[in-house]
Amino acid sequence: MPNKISIKNKITSFKKSIKVSGDKSLSIRWVIFASLANGVSQAKNLLLSEDVLAAINGIKKLGIKVDINKNKCRIYGKGINGYQYKKKIIINAKNSGTFGRLILGLLVNASNPIKLIGDRSLSKRDFQRITDPLKKFGAKFKLNKNKNLPLIIYGSKNLKPIKYYENRGSAQCKSAVIFAGIRTKGITYIKAKKSRNHTELLCKYLNLPIQIKKKERFDFIKVNNVKRINPINYTIPSDISSAAFFIVLTALSEKSKLIIKKVNVNTSRIGIITILKRMNVKVKFSNIKIYKGEKTADIQVQSTNNIKAINCPTKLNSGAIDEFLVIFLIAAKAKGISYFKDLSELDKKESPRLQLGSKILKSMGIKNNVTKNSIKIFGNPNLNINVNKKIIIKNFLKDHRIFMTSVIAALSFGGQWDIHDKDSIKTSFPNFLEIIKNLQNND
Image 1 (cartoon, helix red, strand yellow):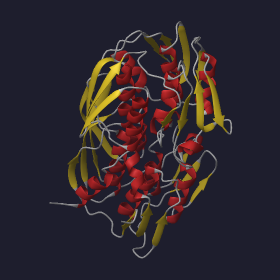
Image 2 (cartoon, one colour):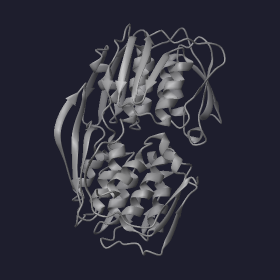
Image 3 (cartoon, rainbow, N blue to C red):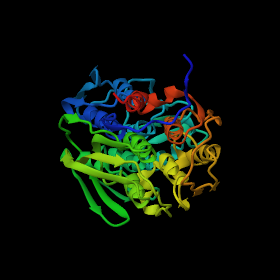
Image 4 (cartoon, rainbow, N blue to C red):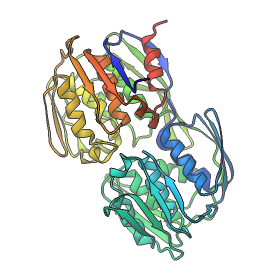
């Protein structure tokens, strides 16, 4: 079967309630914490995407037993020092920057060298941002071309706590240092620019010796050595990054309403909601709850007219970094010029997303000016792509978010689209097209 999808018609109006897949960030972190626990941990609604399966296979290489039955998973943790460091271990993170970077923090005391590899896309991404602070603990690294995968980590038996200033707003860098800190005697101090805080919330829920002081722009974190982690049974909330595609599709469709159930709406992740509300999109939360430290809610959204342009405050960037591609589609239909800046982190993801996002908009007939870290989008409230216009999306490093954004654009604005590499969704959202099909079925 061809690894592409063709879309020739806009989606018709719909009124539905859906549930999207489990949160990828939480799924991977649960796998890591469960592997360190004393005893058996169980998760339901675990996202069984390629990224999460890479994490599961990675901990298996370190001697941890895992059982999977549908979307239920059991991990048989062997304790904080339970990893087995056999000779010539190769861990394949595939496309998962989250797992690839976080696991390095837990390998800083490995007794044998371990090789970390990834797919073509991950191998282009910067790992020096992780290895530089981890070197200060005492680990050593051999990287390809000084900053990329494949790399080899040489652990140390004499780890020393560090002081680390994380100024990128990278939750992956911060989390890797936290994990190294729990391996190290003494106190590791972190000053971190605001970013996702899933690791810290799980640490707090598990009563680990980590202290956090929140300031307006930075968090100050103290990490102590950890002796024991209790098993964690977890029903993974749904992923707001996956929900984002359907929020935008509903807002851009005519006479449509949608409820997305039990979504993780952690305050460090809802930048897209704040941005869309400022652009006059009709979206709100209901049924708000706190579940094991994480806030969850049902998200209600409906078709929106009179979308407003936005000069997006940079303080919202870190909370929406994975959602900007679909936010650009909202800007495409806004009245006026939208401006998004300080987005260099977009091009450090699976593909150069800022440049490819600009290319998609231009293929739709939307004027935009793009630089290395910013984009101006000249919105057209009457945007409706000619039914005979052909748009081909390919050569995007199999980036799952480029694929899904293109599908939402095709269903929202019309035209004849051929979107290649549909298997890319296996990275983060394997049933994305099934939910699309469900929305198109009005039975």
